Image (cartoon, rainbow, N blue to C red; front, side, top):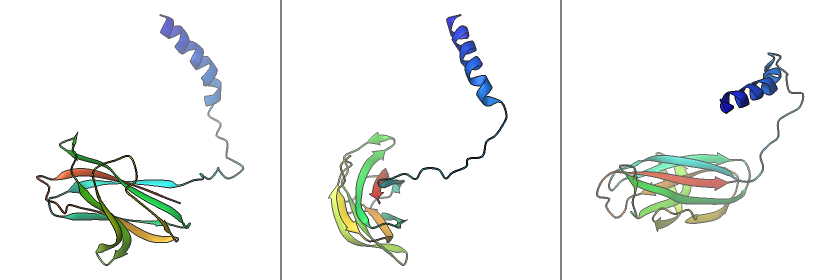
Length: 140
């Protein structure tokens, strides 16, 4: 009963704000500052690699982390190679890499000029089965 009373009060307060009149903004919306974060997810088959490209217009610090590795929805401590580089044909020419298990701390970090880059994840140690993964890339 109390919930109906509260719902009624909320509708009385919110109702006038939904009058049907649509206002057009007179100024541009605010632009977010700070690094952008992009998540790349997929499934990695044993002894294969996957890569993803991204572009940014501002030079600055780029970091990448292997955020999760799962098998059938259960986190596992598998070690994969994560690498940063530049797209080359149908692949990613990695310029720096690390072998890592999932972590909430970036495994790779470097300064980069504005441009198009890629992140690659690879199984170099022989997974026992396909694994789902998520890579987190933060850049300017």
